[in-house]
Image (cartoon, rainbow, N blue to C red):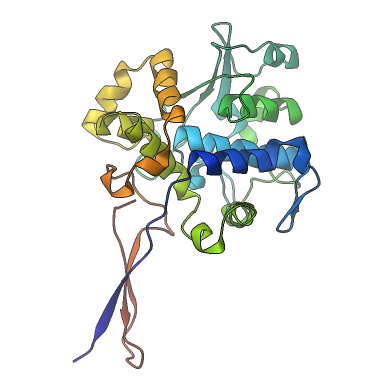
Length: 298
């Protein structure tokens, strides 16, 4: 009789508020200029540094999956610069001028249109339901502020926006997921132990948003709605959210700390391809084939 040993992958952990601050400062604080993170040199204000710094904050506030932002071969199913527009003084601009961007104040928004995703492959469910990111000019941990900086640093005008990936590398190509994962790991190792860094991944940003919403007292339906996980209740909640409601809910979440919430208490937010796997493996010495099964947990 063949013997099997059941091994569960380690569930990824959320980032704490202290982790978020350290990660953001690493990529945005001028004091870290020219600091080496793995093979990448932080150059505050450079296109690649701004792109990576903006990506961390967008993942944190939107609950987006890495696959929606990165690709080895970019196409329309990933976010482009056309996915981002700006509501400035209650007027929406799809290709704002530098002067308009610099005029942004509290009460303005960056609007992100979600691309097709795992649970919405054609973009018919969430593609018409934008992500509202409120602008907080003095807050370094503000995704809207970071995306404005991305526009100012690497402007793309008019029809070119639809043909340009939201986040590009030094060669102008869409940033690849493998590169982002390596940079994140090396970034984490600058301020946490290697053992803890192993429990953090790009999916932790999505888990962090869910935990912070939970800690802020939001219902499971609201958490699913802001993380864009399809269910009848989440869609009903989203339809009742105005931009100000959306911003207020995210504001409560920002003030909460994910470390107070057990990940197991979250509703199912879905997984990425390389996470949430149950592996049934043979005991050493047996020659049975390894079977990998996906499950729908975090």
